[in-house]
Length: 217
Image 1 (cartoon, helix red, strand yellow):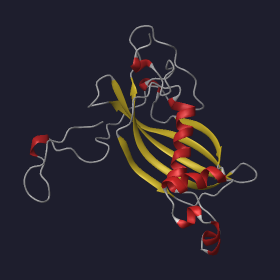
Image 2 (cartoon, one colour):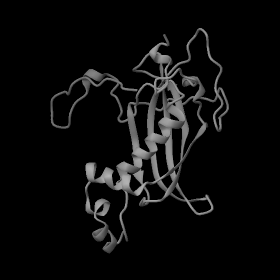
Image 3 (cartoon, one colour):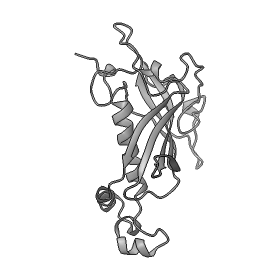
Image 4 (cartoon, helix red, strand yellow):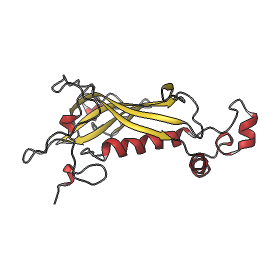
């Protein structure tokens, strides 16, 4: 049986490991088309604001029509990330994100080019055997000629990936683009907040010491 750490994010034997995700690597996550019915169904279920679900009100507004919930757009990004990278990589959850920006409205029929760039990688301080990879994800609206017209989403986040097994190593799989192997790996620190040098001394703004802060990446 394949050990869990050697499985991809979709449960198949992994082809890519922490060591393959070097700073400078860009991975093309394909192009997604925004389905209008799905866009509205998502909004009705999870984000039923009028400019996402009411065509008449949205048409009379500055938006000029329905626009996607930002979280629907994020879900399209996530699906592309799973289909084109996590389905091949020894992924093991994520400690979180630092930035999520919706830079322009997304509408039904939009074609969005998706990609991730590896910005940094280092062994995890919280999860032995895993590496913490810092990534930037982007979605770009394409014009009729398939050239990028406008960036609509940008996110910075981190993922945990298992190190390559020491025995029976599979060969590194090819990626759409790759950075130079052996690139210097920066240590960017915790994902969300500075962790005190002595976790037990963390204090809240309101007075007594808070619970110990554990590193989470």
